[in-house]
Image 1 (cartoon, rainbow, N blue to C red):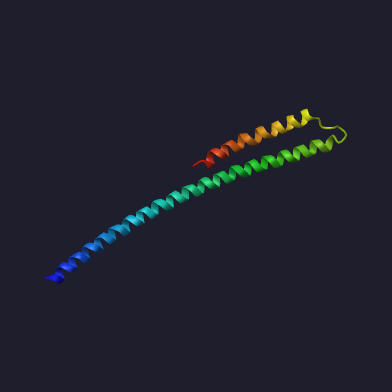
Image 2 (image 1 turned 180 degrees about the vertical axis):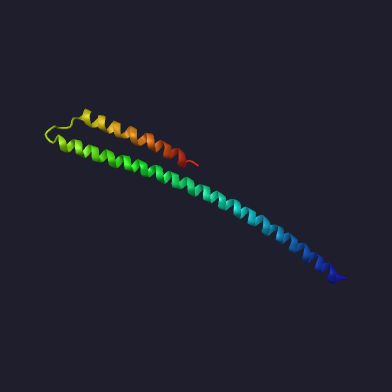
Length: 104
């Protein structure tokens, strides 16, 4: 009689363990999906940052070419501020999109 009671407890434990395994498998699947989604969001942020970097490179090249074309002209504070403002507008209009993507 005692052997039968022990066997029932053991079978009950096995059922609980199987249920726990299934629950953990489902939890693992959900976490993998969440990680894949976050990975894609990170890739998008990297693409946006790369775009910002390309814009900065283009602006640097443009700035260098303008300075090279007018070597005798001294750049006044107004001209420098004007160019700086133009570059900042381009950069921050793109980087604000990147910032929005980074807050997930």
